[in-house]
Length: 151
Length: 116
Length: 159
Image (cartoon, rainbow over all chains, first blue to last red; front, top):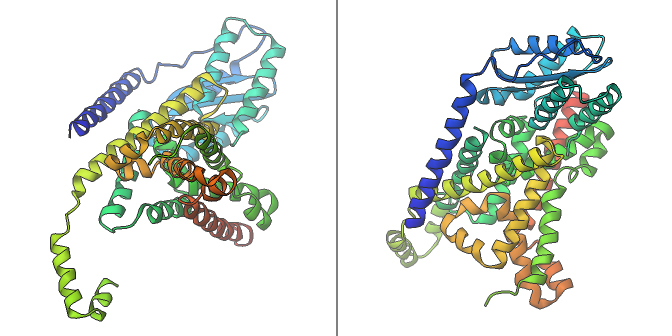
């Protein structure tokens, strides 16, 4: 019986922690994690910025990151948790929209947490001019490969 | 948030199992077999992937996911090779669970001594 | 089906059956369900932590982190089974520890350990899937049927 009590407490604690952390992110929803990358440097990120603006218009989007090279555009975004049942559909729709809107680029869209993290990191590097054009292309190719992995 | 839903959804699936144990008096082997088949059917209807998107490990750790992955592997291979792929692709995605169980089973048998 | 059996059995057996039914210990359903919910949920919670670690610190996506997560859970199960802890959890949690993939791991690993005395080839090798066999057999067969139907529908039905 004591073990049951401990477990109950644990369950409650877990749910409390999970809920509080969620509230934090939902409060600063629309200005959070949406930084424009400077367009002045050698690697023009204006396409990525436009894509971010477009995706951010969707009400359910909580976080979006994007990076482009001259031929490719990679985007990763997150949505509200309760909408995640439709995640695959939303991803497909956004992919289609993006390909249409930026037809001069090959657009790749992902909602995977790993891609969100990686593209965020890449944005940071571009912003601080820590990455060369050649390396950026390699990095983007690597991330596209990561998106396609299935097992 | 995903941690919370992993707990709730995973727990709920286990409660369904407990009801099958207690109310329908099924033994664990039959219950787990039903669960795997249920997972395969749910994936056939396209309902299991949304659940994984929503609940993460809450849907991918219960044994139902085994059935889901079996269908996934078969479908993946079927897209490339047609009907033959259905036969050859079944273990494509699932291999991790079974190979881990075999490997750690044999290692366990080497390390540990049977009780009693 | 139970009724049919009852009718065919002699009257004394019938009386015994009703008597046994009265005396049968009622399994505390609600309490068992709460236990199953908490333990099962907790195992999935641990799984979520492991998979998050794989996504954040290793080169796995949410998509690909599933396999190493399952392998890690079964690895942990090996020790819990070997030291006899998993059996004790199982007595407490019922379906809570049987339904997650750790329960599958436990049934394979415990069968392997148990039959070790009969030798490694025929003992361990022959009996390792003794408990988990039905799950694999009918999982594979039902997956085959479902994938077959789905493939036929998509390829010839034009769905």
